Length: 490
Image 1 (cartoon, one colour):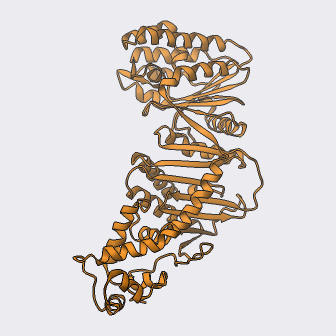
Image 2 (image 1 turned 90 degrees about the vertical axis):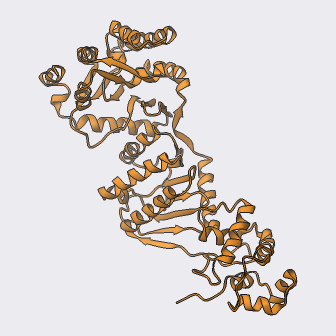
Image 3 (image 1 turned 45 degrees about the vertical axis):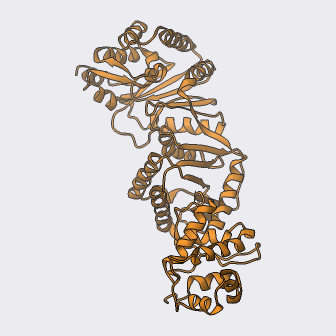
């Protein structure tokens, strides 16, 4: 049905304003107000009346923190900064002038009773509906100006995310676009999930941390919940929410999409209240603090627990020391940094003489093969420590691989991924059993650390072992050295 109510009529009815009262404020005859209200005469943008009308209703709404008008403008102009009163007034005046009649009813009905309000929202059904809602949410965020805040929390089963491969690829691409637009994402994880579920979360989110713009937290309490919630929020813009009876419920019942400011702010308050009692899951470490981080890492590695290393190519700590010195000289690394790196090398190798520490190294044989196409190979770990790109000549790279293989013994296992694995870390990782995780990447040169929450550490270990156990034995204990040798001949 066509909406024929005028905008002025909506405002006057919502605020219970009589024609006589508005006429007195504008110093006009009440019959003119009646004509504007009933669409018998247009407001002129050449007069001062639109500005005066905007000021009149803003003054009435001021006692309620401009809730009605903020919501009205937010619904019609999502990119407007309704917290800026000057901008709010300009958009309100623009809204009054743009059309005499309403194209849609506002989502919130005005009430002087602050304990109640009405709103409209969109309902999406089942997992397919959840995917549609999330794509709409992400598309809106991508279309907005830079530096938006995106808030994410979900306790629900994530089947809706992973069961459709095309959707998951779209989800992945759009998350990268959000970070490329300098949007800031905050995500709260819960640790009352199964270890396998936490491991899946690690795989999906770790690589995004390497790009910056993403902060993860975890709710540090284990609890059995009656219902499980989802909250996706673009701050001061829109919110998606949903509930399920348990994490075993694979089919989502309904997803609700709100875009009225009042409801969105209520959801924001809920998110930030939960966040107050959360701890950081992954901390982005400034590259300038790498020395402090390495010191902590070396102390940690000295603990008599197993450790796991994942990287595309072997780390510099497994090469011959004289080769390392040559590489640093060829890359013109300053003396002070050279001494620090050699000190790390010595400490690391001394620690790994301890027979109580069992170590598993996992490398990507396909990436090694690809690197051998080049005369010089980029070493990410050395680049991070030297704060500049460090390249290693092909002959020294081959020698490094051979030297790494010589370290194999009952306390040191080496495995190789050859084809692209179904599961991955998306980053170089060092995992110390029952302690901590260090992940590093050369992209934008961040270093990332996880805290020592046992459930999270166990999930990293579980994830590593899932990858390790998926590798054919020929690439582990019964290593096919002929294949390695053939690659090194290239």
